[in-house]
Image 1 (cartoon, one colour):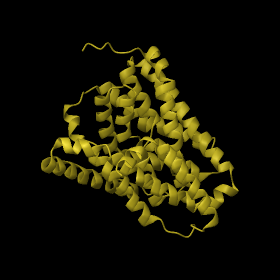
Image 2 (cartoon, rainbow, N blue to C red):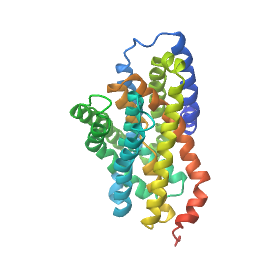
Image 3 (cartoon, rainbow, N blue to C red):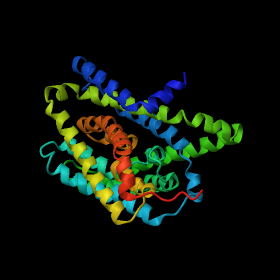
Image 4 (cartoon, rainbow, N blue to C red):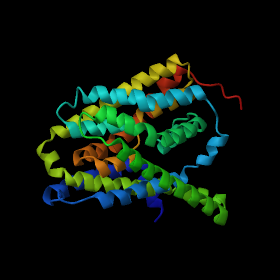
Length: 328
């Protein structure tokens, strides 16, 4: 039974696509528009973040590497360059679609955290550096993201910075603290080997929270989206343009900074990917339904794009950036 959680984790894009389609169909025939999904959103937040942060061993940061140039450049890209890219696209591609523009603002302001570690391992990049960047990036979200959202998205909606700070602190620090406590107690009572055995199931549990939010957020706006199919095309064009610009800039920056592939790929992944769980959680709590819808579409495209980045562009990136010599 637990193996299905691993399957969900590995094939999340397929499950999101399936739930997305089911929600579109049901939402068209059943009226979800008057449904208040606040309680569903809060429950989904903890389903997403609590298991994810339980498996994220923050303590290992103390023993990880200290490549300050890579850490600082990746965080600059993940927060500031990403927000500038979002700023440009919301003022060009998404003029007149304020709710969709807000979704792209969130994409640019909330970087990827835990999945950066997993993707780095798949790409044969420096996992130790990815861990440090993921933890620091996660802890910076309640501080930097509300400010970036305010300056970038204030033209599209009234943004209460303090409210965003408090929500993000609650959504990140509470699951993080509970996750650390849970992890320590499991290791203390059952041993580290037991914890490592169940750790592989935690991302699958987090994925269930993503599927929950995707279903209700898509069902809520289904009729509007089906009646205005250009919304699909706009979201697709905006997200693809975002990934393309971020990838191009980060590849050039990695070359200019003389990063080898193992470090350069961290910069590229950190600049390109953004948080799915946290951005969806925040959007479902305080932003309009179409904003949540656009972010619900993102996991489908992001997984395909990251796989393209690793497997299709990976061999070229190894040649373009060069690889570190393995001295083992």
